[in-house]
Image 1: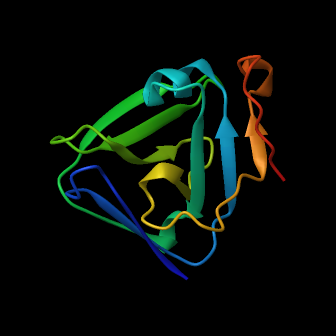
Image 2 (image 1 turned 180 degrees about the horizontal axis):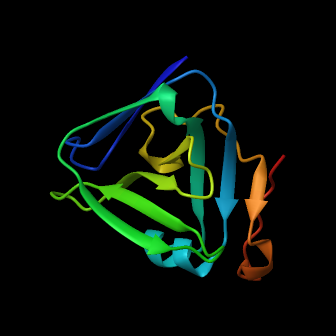
Length: 125
């Protein structure tokens, strides 16, 4: 299966082939800051199954796990489309909301659930 993910303005894209390795909802404070929401959702694919195109900017930070994560975002609209978690060097994560068609990409893992806001209910797996 082929899927296309884009930024808001369409200049930065990620095209995936095959099924994701996992779809994870993350409640860590870093994901909250990155998304401006109460959690982030990462769809992780084997990096060999992801092709990225367009102008991008990079931001690297240390995650709550202690591992670095390198984010790729559009310099025009600011959307973070994909990122590379050093803890999983062979995987590329793509934001669920960036996919043109996110059907069938339900979360199967919850990360940092202990940091979940008390009013948020998410079912995974």
